[in-house]
Length: 623
Ligand code: COA
Ligand code: AMP
Image (cartoon, rainbow, N blue to C red; front, side, top):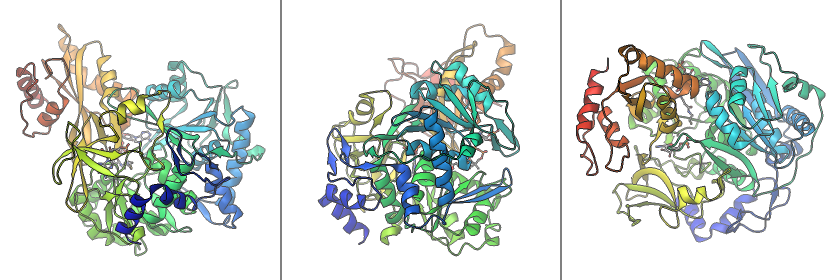
């Protein structure tokens, strides 16, 4: 069936459509009911994510197939881990977690680099029916502490270090500092000692990861209600407080399995590679659960698209592991193109078996898409989604034989997602007119079921602006052919190298500086990373020239120390005054236009038009 037919089948009978799709994953008790308002998808099904991702394939005789290709140019390591071997480690680790008191409904926070042990920790937690929350390894102690306090984990699983090109990031000092900052204290910290960095374990708190595996216990999969939470993944909103997106088990697996074949066209047994990090939603969905539920061989890559060692790294991986479908962020392609504009490094590898390259995480500029498509000679498919949704909502559909692409558009709606574009009063806008992008409720399987620790906030933040619709937070328009063009966020969330960051968390750090009276952080356009945060600060009266001199350096260091290097924060502008509305709200959109050199209409609500000149002066006087 082609895209239109499949979309039609879903619109005609959404519940039957998803009940049929549900047959493609291994349930412990298959669901009879598709959806129940207030309960969610597949309310009477029983399932275990680890069982569907590992045990079911081993039981069906595929234990010898490679589950994970671990490739780490930063440590010079490669490992192939079969489904049999992965299951043995996961089962042993689950047994160890259980002995430490983690049971069904328990909570495990995972703060790890891109190593196979991170996947083991994720799946072992799922095996027990417990909930995991993976925190991206690039976040510093303060961000980790916020997540520890909100998630209140029973224990933490970590490693002794992460490795970035040219430097090691010791994790234990970050964990220690986070636990000193947090009010919640997990009972134990399980530590994977990496050969690159030893750590002295605290005898009353820390446990060696390898000791647990060496015990070699085993633990069966816990049959869980399908609607139970599988994980909490924190994402950035406008404020400095991260939002814990909650995902259920069964509907998520159904959506992922459906997408692996129908969107990505990835067949069981083939290699599939999402070049992301397990700390982001792409990593959860398309490094771990999606490929494993599909019985693909997933690639776990601990390296960068450039510099480890060169801009041919992605092509080497695709060639070496016979990757048929790959997925990365446009920023990675921009970085490669910048270093290898003629794609000469690409020519060194046999990429003839690659079928598609998918891009997501930020707007894919047509130049980047065209460069990649012309060089790779395969369709390069932009697709759009969000942490909240869990899997793509706009795409092309090679799995249904449809690779129609409109450059600049993020694709057509995935069956399950009914899009509309609304004006401020909630009226549908005509095709081609820009407005708020929304999705009709109920959201399909795989989408968030709530916000952790915040009853009612999901409804308030996402469902209350337009009745009956989920607010994506993105603006854009629909064209006559049903393609959706996503033009950017309507809120103050930034997208830095495909990473979603909040202006609020950086502002919190800057505002804490004793010389700063007030500040505003905005995402400025950047050729490589899409956006980078920049700060505008107003100093307290009487700040000394010495402080003014070193302010930028100090603030850059503090943001690196407290949010993490991943914020890519480098620039501070000192201004006399910030543009605000009469009610005191900072006009960040106007500041963004000023820093990007774009024309803009003077906001009718502006309190102090002189602030525009002040901001312009601050920009032009910055060295
Ligand atoms: N742990 C610790 N530090 C990390 C980190 C991690 N897991 N990930 C990134 N950092 C650090 C980097 O070392 C860098 O530090 P520096 O300022 O000392 O150089 C900083 O955070 C910024 O990192 P990054 O955004 O990766 O930029 P980069 O300049 O090192 O590399 C790209 C640029 C384009 C190659 C890189 O951004 C990239 O690969 N992007 C793809 C993003 C992606 O896949 N996103 C997933 C969304 S689907
Ligand atoms: P995240 O939750 O980190 O996946 O970030 C989601 C946000 O990234 C979306 O709301 C968009 O603003 C942006 N985004 C993701 N994919 C795309 C895309 N293909 N085109 C444009 N923006 C995108």
